Image 1 (cartoon, rainbow, N blue to C red):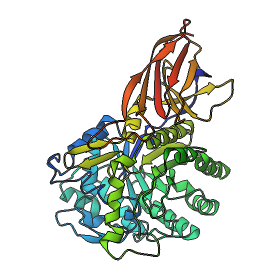
Image 2: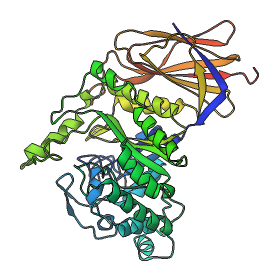
Image 3: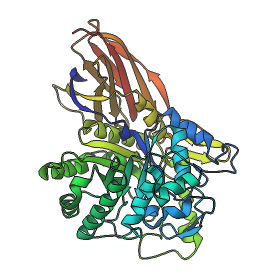
Image 4: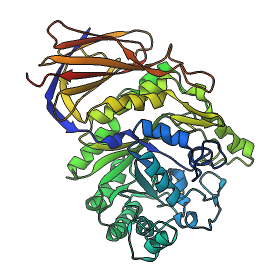
Length: 490
């Protein structure tokens, strides 16, 4: 049995709620037929699906990144505002973009969800002026052509969009308008200059990766103008076939999840850029499936490059492997909360998302319940110590509220076959304790239109006679949060 000593008064870092963020891109059914579907019986007067909005509100989504993703690197926001929308051919995903869901619709959607909007700008085919015009449209009042255009379009009050990203994966050869380190550093510097002169209150991120040359060039040139640095992570790549890794394979992906964070943190510290935080603003276990689109071979018929994308929406693919990985990733963010300030699950709706829409409603996949479970976590990462040997099958993050009287401990049992018993000992008495678990009957448990196998349910725990220790038996392949109410006095 593993015994963990917990120290509620030793707060190590503040946890940003933005680490529970989400992402939406104009890819396949994420926007049209997902978030925005005027023909659906679940749509409101604005064409937004209320069942999706209600599900996002229930888990208190703090922030949503939009409109991409690779899509944004050829997206011109001005075609998607006003009464006359301009359809264009989307050269990222090779479909027609009707531009019916644009900036105003996105802001309206975020307000209905109750979350912050996070806008990613076009740093591929776009210009620094176009980026700053977008800030003007969203945030200026009574001045500027685009500030007045927003008012003319029926939105007299500024949107006050605080979070902005310059570019997506502009370091990647697949990205439209891919750049090199020197060119990227110059573009970001000049774009940041114009965007912050338009609204000095915004917070800016820029696309980066765990590469020394790229990041050093960017940070030396533009670090003083940035508030965030953006990195992405997908682990299960499929090489043109939608063959998702099984649970045992995914176990390997759960090891050393904080390596990219360590590398970026080290560079930030070396360059004395401690004011910059990491935005892990695209992450998921599963890479998206879009064959014959991003390599030299391009599919010539929809059956080659468009129809296969439907494979992303097969609900039975998203199992306890996805749930367990997602919990381990969130634990990693909590443990590194002194530098990771934002993370955006990619995507929120459809394809590899946590919510899948269909004509008759929605399916909440296993990953959705992980985010709902983590609503029980507290705001401070606190110290804990294991005096014995570590168990590599357990993944842990211990949190407390500001008073140090409410504790929430996320503990994942990654083992696909064996349960684990773990105890937590405090330096004060327990008033109350409970455990909540996300799990299904086996590692391949999933939720579909016809069945729901993965849910949150309350588990059983044992308190010691001296009221200082809680002991729990964790099921195989389970995600657990143990909540405790402590006495005020030691």
